[in-house]
Image (cartoon, rainbow, N blue to C red; front, side):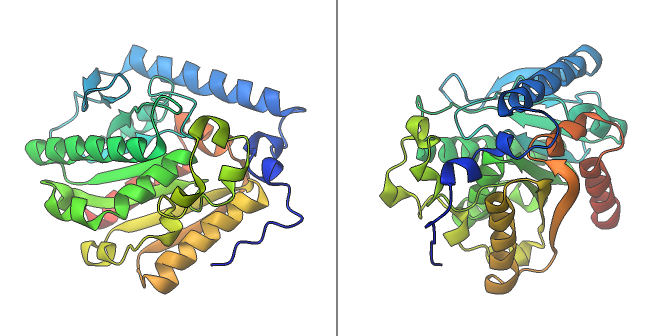
Length: 297
């Protein structure tokens, strides 16, 4: 796949807050986002049964939360991996989607991980694999009817890298319970972003960009597992972010010949309210997830 960057302002293309139509400055966009998800995440902890800060690895960031511990053992599980360009945001501010899912008897597991520059991106990818191993083994122990992963922005990149690891999926107990994934405003090709200010903290060498890009991975093994993949982006994501979602869909659909593939550019959403809305009862993720559970489980 050719990379054409001449005449493109990469810094702007990879600055999602510059494309929102809701506020007068990028700083207001990000401030509002942090405030909204933090407040909604705190509300979840004040109202739902949970088990927090479960260690799945030996470093400080490798912890996860299980929300909805009062639900039946066999409840479906949604695993959420936050974004923030691998260097911002947190597990604590990413619990906001649990409330609407709990009403439909779906457990939520929120995964934390060490951030750059303390951790390298390959280390973070490996941490998400460790977290997934914990989740699959937990799902197997509990007899969960199905496991779903959702990731936003850089979190979508991490979910996609996890899905590409056929050896891990083949060797991990409970991975047969994997049902689907939701990749929301994701970044799947890292060759351009390493030439922006994002890379000041990530510090990704040029030679690692392709190996760490899901756009160049193979996903044919997911077909036999009948995994459903939903790729979503917002109308007010940057053209580059929308292009990455379309190209990743094309990879899975045309090159990997996967079925059960879905792509949608959602009207009137930007890079941030496309997940902020998850705290609301009537949101599209809850609808997609409940529909998938009712159809397939």
